[in-house]
View (spheres, helix red, strand yellow):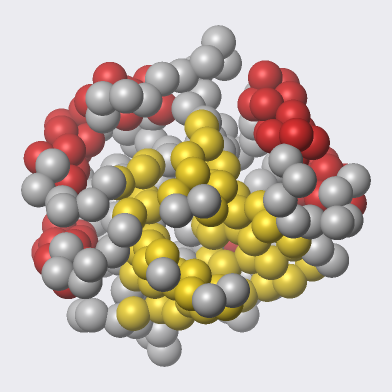
Length: 247
Ligand SMILES: [Fe+2]
């Protein structure tokens, strides 16, 4: 059995209050303390660690907490992060010539691709690397971790203003690999939602800050979903996942 948690969109500031007066540090710590006691094999972080923009002190705050974990943690940046600052605090991470931080990890024989969409799109080097990773594997399962959902997800506010800028390119790449089921774990939309599109299965995990009403014509807080983290389990050929609400 392989059991992994996914936490995302903490939006923490150490110096300023957010407009909704959410205890972002407290929310994260509630989830984190729960996750630390659940025997996970690894924990993924989906980006947007920082409130508005990348902050070295926020990354150091996370680094200090993550250093207490009994499992390995794997991180990607969001659009409210700075990949260069992140890679300077979290040891073992590197950026390429486009200042993007992407990599692959195999956990219990399950391959995971971690992408950097912090600019809302990906550089040519990252696209080339992703294309090669898809081409060179015979595995029919591909698991991708990225901040932005790679396809639209039915949120009026997010789809119209903050969607991934290269959805068509991602879909074209997925179509070139029809033999594979591409499972994507993302954050960014501040919503608990599952989306399928052709051979793409997308699981969006809610934020530990606020969640966004997908049906409102503009920005509105979604009060009917709780914050939480996603647990993902691979067992005896099955994969199952759900959001765990702790708060
Ligand atoms: Fe976010």
